[in-house]
Image 1 (tube, rainbow, N blue to C red):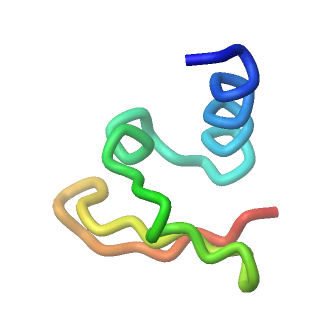
Image 2: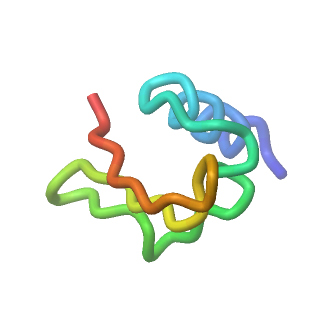
Image 3: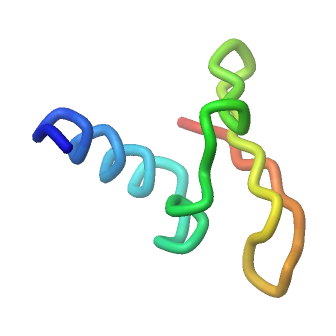
Length: 54
């Protein structure tokens, strides 16, 4: 992966408070850029979450 891709991943983790395991399972369809939301299906304890990006 390129340096830019790593920067985007780290920025997303930091700005939204995602855990490493959540980022690893993240797919493009889980990101709603119009509403600035990230949909996490299998978060901590198997819960479903919607994260609001700041």
